[in-house]
Amino acid sequence: MKLILHIDGASRGNPGPAAIGVIVTDENGTVLAEIGEYIGETTNNVAEYKALLRGLKEADRLGAQEISVYSDSELLVKQMEGAYRVRHPGLVTLNNQARNMIRVFAQVTLTHVPREQTTSADKLANEVLDLRKQETAATTKATDKGAEIRVVKMSPKETEIAPWGSRWQLLSVPPLALHRLMINPGQRLPYQETPVDVVAHVLSGKGRLTAGGAEFALETGDSVFISKSATGVVEVVGEQPLVVVAGLIPNIKGEEHEPVDGT
Image (cartoon, rainbow, N blue to C red; front, side, top):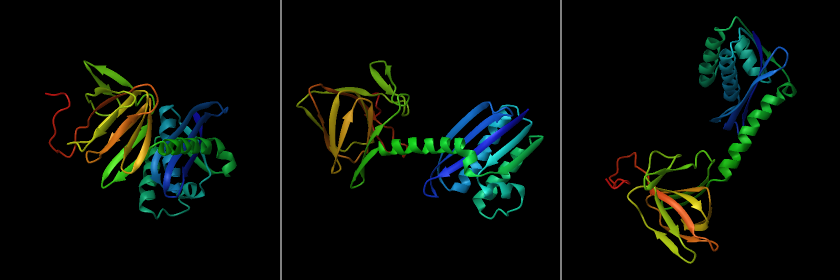
């Protein structure tokens, strides 16, 4: 079976936030796989190689014997063909990985094409970066003398709350017993330094958190991460109570603290 791969890597900042886009089709143009993945902060050239590696992996999974790869990166294609030397240490490793992966196929051809011919793969990569940018913009931080507050807009999967006996568990953090708290309109809940960091998740209502010289709006679905040295106050906005579940985050550095389950 022969498959066609259109690949692209995008980096905003070069180096900067980067993502890959891979479109896999058969010889008739039927799309068999569309892959868009965030790969962290890196360069355009690394992103191009990561797209190639991901495409080769997918083609192998689909059972391809022959592959035609189309990329708008002349550097990638020429280096894989041996026409250009690979000088950058990071690219040497990726180039070797790609060459090793290619050996599993009966035939692989790489073709440099204009950007217009990789628009679908480019679109996938940039859609991933756009989404990542939105997630980053939704994360607000305030720092005051080393105390950090983060209010994070999380996905439904990450913010799933599960009953755990008389306690609750937030699935986006390590197993953690959370205590349910309700703040009524007109009440203010101050908090002081704690032995370890704290996580809280808003079950319902709207509120306002003031800390570190900044003010944060809180609403249903928000998760709040508060460092152990932070101080501030939480109050209700509106006429409905603010209901949260909160607990201490086990400290991986080994500082002593009381277990959250009371044992």
